[in-house]
Amino acid sequence: MWLVLLFTAGAWGQDVTARDLTVRMFDTDRVGAVTVTPLSGAVTWKACPGCAFQALGRAVTVKSGAAVGVVVLGDVRVETDTRRKASAAGSWRVDSERDGLRVRVTLPSERYVAAVLSGEAAADEPPASLRALAVVVRSYAMTHPGELTDSTKTQVLRLGAVSGAIADAVRETAGETLWVGGRQVPGYFTQSSGGVTEASSVAWGGVAQVWLRSQADPASERAPSQWHAEIGLEELRQALVREGFAVVGPVREIAVVRRTGSGRVGRIRVGGFEMAGPAFRFAMGRELGWNRLRSDLYTVRVVGQSAVFEGKGYGHGVGLSQAGARVMAGEGRDAGAILRFYFPGAAVRVTAQDAGWQTRDGVGWTLVSTAPDGEMVKKGDEAWRRARGLVRVSEAVHPVVRVFPTVALFRGVTGEPGWTLAATRGERIFMQPAGVRAPGLLLHEMLHVLVEARASDGVPLWFREGLVEALAEPGGSMEVGLVKDVEGKLERPGSLAEAQVAHREAGAMVRRLVKGYGVGVVVGWLTSGVPQGRE
Image 1 (cartoon, rainbow, N blue to C red):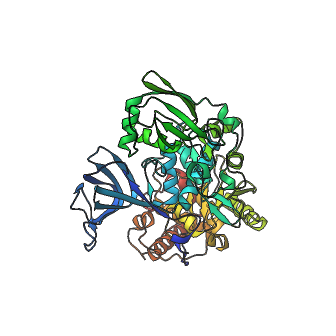
Image 2 (cartoon, one colour):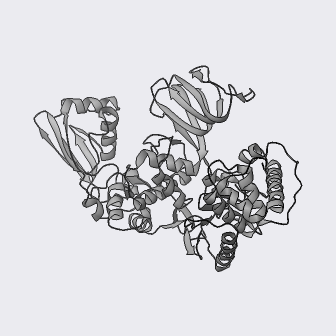
Image 3 (cartoon, rainbow, N blue to C red):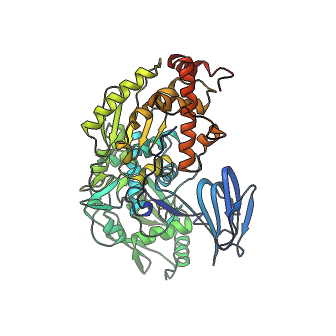
């Protein structure tokens, strides 16, 4: 399903557009044992740093105290003795640490973004706000200096199956992050700002950042976020004591001492003890549950033996408000407009030199690139015209060609090895930067679109791949017998050389058929099937 060509890949780990990210899983649990079960494909593992990798054909349980550098590679399900589980293809590592087992998984940044959207976005999130959230999530991950977790310490994620809407949002914003000048900057999001966002410097300290300042948020104001909580005074005091605060009882008074510019509680006094508003909320959340004090935007009074809180908004209030973004999307604002509002002064880009993904329409197809040019549109028009003349289909087909600015981003989105220049999935064609310069590549991939659109179920891969090769290069080799199991090697090539030989073999096989039966008859077999004895 792709054309292969050798090239030198860039440094995956240093790319600003995509890289592998390591996430500490089950972060809030005290894990004593994990069971790893292989799900699909080849799964290998090793039980210690000095051990050799071996196939993992059945479930294996790792217990605390015995695990030192257990590594599992492949698609697996990991279940803990705390009744948590996660499934993903990646590089998993299990280590014993002082408080139990630590489980970490390394996966491409684009898959990480999809997992966070699965964990944080509403099931019916509009496309525009979902895309905006994808950019924010990616911006945070690509600039985060410490360890990522699966909890609210960084960004909550849910590994496993990804919805079509989330897959679309991640693909359409692939590699896009927030930039200020020539610098990639972090983004943050909150469930609801309550009508006014908070400055990052006020919420967490540090230098004020222009793109993370406090501002009125009318869209969030239009999304109800009021909440009410009552907490017994002694229950509240004991929670603070467990968190290490020296609150002496009995508590008879709770009062806001100072508010921030956004109206949030900056300092609060509990009895005779004064503390920061966010520290108070975090203590209540950790001890009593995060659904009690939902934000720092509240009033408080003592009624009898209880503290009564009336508030609005959910979360810290910094950056994009999910509630407000959803309202804006419902009013017809696109992802760019949402991001410009919540991050004033920041631009959305893939690299420091571009302006994000841009779209150019060709004749019957569309080019998506960070640097679209008229010459490629002309080449695409000619390739699409030739392809449609060779393979006719009854239904409307409209290819979308996405040209990636870096090898790392192409690999992160498609999952293809570095020696693959292009990959076609349905009507979508994904191309590496070097792929733009490869002679005949656009024609080759557009033929793939038409062949797959016309092919009936059961038409073998060797015939579909070989037909593309034969139509793209009719004068190519007809020498067959170079490789056994062409079908298997096309499905799962182990190397560049193996893939090239398999494609050449498939092309030669179909060229022989074209020579004997004519191109029209052979193309017709896409619909009717390859006759017996012609395989």
